[in-house]
Structure formats: structure tokens, C-alpha cells
Amino acid sequence: MVFLSLSLVSADEDGFIGVNIGTDLSDMPHPTQVVALLKSQQIRHVRLYDADRGMLVALAGTGIKVAVTIPNEQLLGIGQSNSTAAHWVSQNIVAHYPATNITTICVGSEVFNNLPNVGPVLVTALKFIHGALVASNLDRQIKVSTPIASTVILDSFPPSQAFFNHSWNPVLVPLLKFLQSTGSSLMLNIYPYYDYMQSNGVIPLDYALFNPLPANKEAVDANTLLHYTNVFDAMVDAAYYAMASLNVTNVPVLVTESGWPSKGDSNEPDATLDNANTYNSNLIKHVLNQTGTPKHPGIPVSTYIYELYNEDTKNGPVSEKNWGLFDANGKPIYTLQLTGSGPAFANDTANQNHCTAKEGADSKMLQAALDWACGPGKVNCSALLQGQPCYEPDNVASHASFAFDSYYHMMGKGEGTCDFNGVAMLTTTDPSHGSCQFIGSDGMNGTFLNSTVADFNSTSSSSWRGRRDYATVGVLIKVLLGSLLL
Image 1 (cartoon, rainbow, N blue to C red):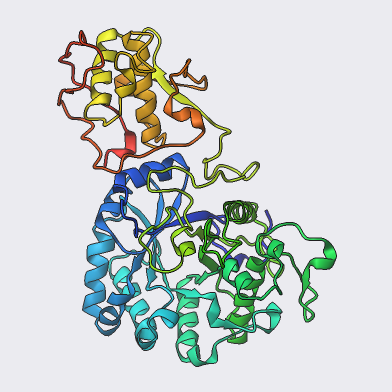
Image 2 (image 1 turned 180 degrees about the vertical axis):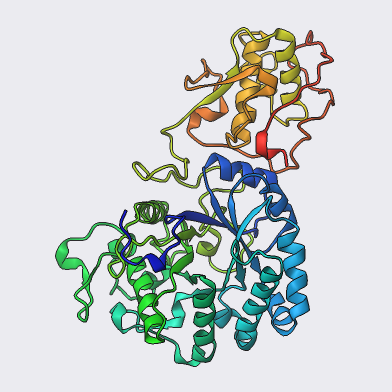
């Protein structure tokens, strides 16, 4: 791949897709369940809206690259006190790095829109946080920036005429100089959904969704003669031109939020499953294919999708609660169409597999593993009771296969969750039979139990028994969960 402007992209990283992890859920999954879902979906980049200790501990040892956020309500204190900033970095970064691969600190979120009174100390807050990283010798490993809303960019089409809201120039000019001097990105939240909704029909739906357009429907920048086929690229280039208007030309754009809601109120007819699927599937392909933008073709625009989970306790319209790729149980809201887009977001049905008892495995070891799965492992084994669909064939291998597969999918098919001390194996053959349907047979990658995950090294015996003659076996059952054991 030939980069047209090497200064715009890190030499050691192509464009990536990450996800934002909001927590406004009535039944928020345990951090270890969140991480299991991330691993099962091959998600290698996440952005947190805080620096939650439980999440940072759960992410340790996974290699997943983490962007943490200083909440807006803490900015005033940090922007007014160097020692407060140093304490924040010590408690939330140094305490977890490098076990947790923190790469980025987001200082606030959309401060100009959400907390304008903090604007005057925003750049000071960034400098104080960066100074604390320098003192800890982490400034090269961890970048510091602040996400801004694309609405701060005015007259955004044609992109070549775009400029920042002049009232914020006293903050934006030193902000951009800081980003330039530290090799950091301009973080931008881009929502084509809202641009489309507010355009009163001027923006075609296909143009917002990345769908192919006939040549005569493409938007042309009359000043540059560049053709734009989607809102996303136009907004990214508008940011580049707006920075250029302030004499900054070598700060890359990192999109910290973008997505499409899958459900809305009656006045939001285009907040649908199909449109959300189309937008996010096309966005992922667009980024991972290193398409770039008309102004910077081939320069990747790394993007965090908004968001991992539907947040049912969020305020506002129905659409505000329905931006997620998954529900709280880890079940996909829709199946992304990612054929040919590379190894990311495996929530399609192309790679189904199951976890079953290994042929020839020791029956006592199988029995112990079955007892563990149906007890501390929290698998619902009621289907194995006499008279229930999976009781027959009435043998330990068959029953263990059901329990193993249920646990494996319950944990989001995470690495190491099909081991059971060596008596389990992966197979692409669906072990369902008759009316006994295994959990993974519906094509969904994982249904999580929203409770604290069991101690996988526990010697506790299970009180569940699928058969009256199942005897307790005094064997220490160890489920090797690799990096999920944090």
C-alpha cells in the first residue's frame, strides 16, 4: 500500500475499526462477559466513556487496544490543577499499563457542545494530562486528544469551503497546535444519520448509507472537482479543510463515534434494522479496505462504531437507545454483512462451530466437567432432565456435549472456553438431534448470563444432577480460559 501522505497515519498501524462501550443498560454485563464478547467478535480496539477499573482489569492481558475517557464533569478540576491531572493518570493509567494496552486518553467528549464553560481550560487539561504521561515516560505510547462533534465544522459542503465555528478558534488553534506537536489525532464524531434526518430530503438516503450511487448522483466539490459518494467522507475531508484554514495540514482525523440506529420513533422512519446493518457493514468495509477519502485516497480513517450494546436506560427518543450491535445478552441485533472485509466482527453465520465432548475422553473427567458446567458454570441444563428434549441418548458424553456447547456459546465462543481440562473439542458439525437443539444452532454467537462469572478454578461441587445415578466425582475441574482468567 502506498500512502500519499505518510504524515497523516502511523507507520505501524493501518486503519482500524473499534467500538464504543456505553454502560447505560439496566442489566450491564459483567466486565469479563464484555471482554469475552469482544474476543469472540475479534474486536481489537475499544473506547470506554470513563476509566472503569473493572473494565481495565478485565481487558488486561488481552492485547485489546483501549481508549479511556476523562468524563466531562472531571475536566474543570483537571484543567485547573496539574496535581489533579497527575493523580488521575497515576490512578487510571499507570496502575493498569502495560498489562492493559491503553493507547489513548480522550479528554472529555464534545466539550464545545456539552460543557462550553469548560472550553477555556480544555487545552490546559490536555497539556496537564500529557505532562503527567511524560513524567511517567508514557507519552510515546499513549496519545491525548478530545472528541469534538462534527457540528463544530460549518459550511461543510463543499468540503473545500469548510471552516470551524469561529467562536471556538481561541480554543481550537492551541488545540490543533497541541495535537500537531504531540503526534495526536483530531477526534471527530460523525453521524450521517443526523445529517440525513436534518437535510429535509436534500441528502439522499443512499448517500448517507455508503450505498453505490450512479455517477450523476455523486456530489462534486466545484472547487476541487473531487467526487463524493457518501456523507462520511465528505465530513472527514471537511475537517481536513477546516484545519487547513487554520494552517494545520498534518494532523490525522480519527473518528471516535459513528453509527446508525436500528429502531426509532414514528418520526424516524429510517432508523431501521436494515439501514443500521447497511451503514455499519459498509462503514467497516470502507475503513478496513483502506479506501481513504477523495482528498486523501488510501489514507485510512480509523473509526469507533457507536456502539457495542443497545443502552436501554438512555434518555431521549427510542433511537437513542438503539445504536448497539448487540443486546445486553451478547446477541447480535442484526447480522453484519462483512464478506471479504477481513477478520473483524465475526457476528455472521459463516463460521459456526460447536463445543462437544472429545471422543474417547475419560468418563469420570467428562462427568466432573458436566457437573461443573451445570453448577458453578451457570449453564441451564434443564433440557437434560428425564423427559426433556436432550435427555436421550442417556449417556455422559451426550449430556456433556450439550453442557459444553451451551457454556462455550454463553461465553461468546471466547478463546479457551472449549477445553474443560482437555475433554472437550471444537467441531463444525451441529450436534443437535431431533427436538434437542443446541444453543449455537441459531447462528447467534453467544448468549451471556448477566451475573458474576463463576470462579473457574473453584473446587465447589455442583448440586445439579441430570440423572439420579450421577455420582459426584472428586476431581478438580479446571476450565482453562486463557486470558479471560485475569
